Length: 289
Image 1 (cartoon, rainbow, N blue to C red):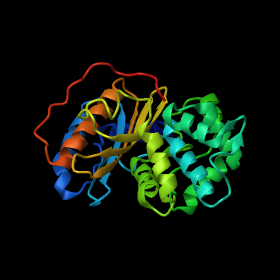
Image 2: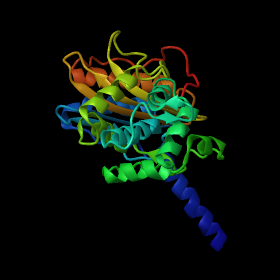
Image 3: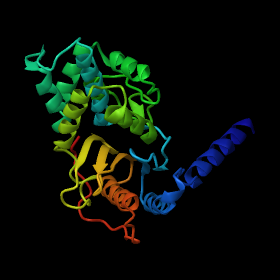
């Protein structure tokens, strides 16, 4: 009898979890965008987290913005931020030689090509994942968890619900805001980081795919089996910049969904939303990091 009751409780919990709609939290002016994003992710297989903030006005939209997702290679922004902060404090330089390459070469490989070996070389030089976590905590970014090197992460059994090496979309937005205009980096280091992000070569089928030609996107992608992410900045035609974070877990159309969500955000924040229909633009995917 007791075992049957426990089974009933578990089944009830699972049914409630399946029936729970996407949690949304948005500025009143962006409710139309919120509804469109909610409709988009509700009609797709998988679990999606989306957040966007206008860096000028603070207006925001989010869907499942507080839900944790594996960061995959989007964690490399935190690694870059930690190293550049050390440069700003005179403890390191971009010309430092690290495992046969300059620090600037490693950062470029890490951010533009998502090179895992370059990332781990930088993490080792900094003192390990704990040093990056210390930097995050020092800057009040407690919602981001960094526990392993990239090599350790890839060797571990895949668990897309693991809290290690995870972030929520809104926590990632907090990191982006710090990197963009917080006291975290000097103007020189910030400019250097944004230049590298603008040259990101991975994930062309994600947030960039459906944006108008010529739109400036400064971003970093992340990929694991069953997980797709893309985070960064979209510059609007009037010069405003939108910090965005997209994570998708499970399902089979994650890059397409991220691309369509990014276009909905672009239209919504520019005030040009006209009831755009969400349709697949071709291709589901890719394995870029």
